[in-house]
Length: 236
Ligand SMILES: [Zn+2]
Image (cartoon, rainbow, N blue to C red; front, side, top):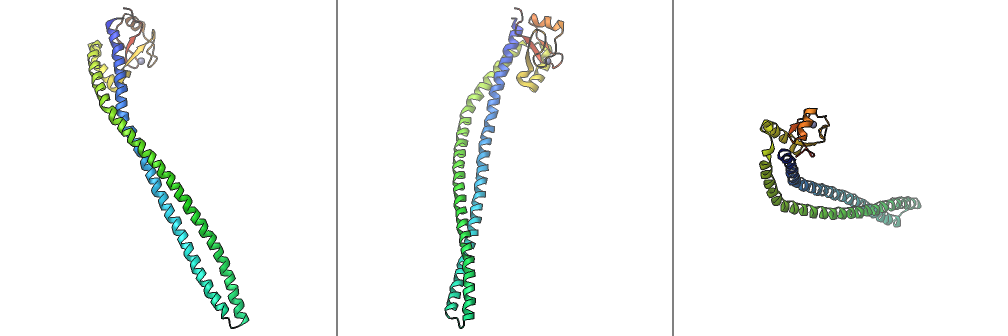
């Protein structure tokens, strides 16, 4: 393999390694933000659940108050019943007591039902609190992990950037500007391997002249996508 295409292949690999490290570094803050987002969502769910508990509890308290008020009314009616002046009065009070007692039995059932709902809502809140705890722990762990990896990644990136710079010597000067533009646009995709007859990025066929140049180890540009091409099987 000629030093030129060998160099281009090396440069391609270096670009790929550099790109991988840069992607890892950029992914760090996104990972943290994702975990923090989960915590925020869980906090909002808990706030909503607490509000729900408050509302059911208030409905239960109202129901209880209604029940007690009714109970007092029934007691008063019982007093009146005992002091009834006639059979007719007695029957009226008795009828009212029966009706109010039936209504109160319903109120009591409704009250107990609401208390059960409060318990269930509190249970659900406990589960949410547990989920928040896990989410918070994971967010902290990810943040520590990302922070710990950052310095090492930056060193690797700086090192690889230097190696890329040094390896760029293989770029023919006539392709220099194009190469820089391509790297800006495609990163490691600025360079591609060609099989014997086509660019492996856009699958455009190579002209016979280009095929010949590739075989003797020259760097060429794909006429369709413009990428710099090298051959893995170039002659020495
Ligand atoms: Zn191409």
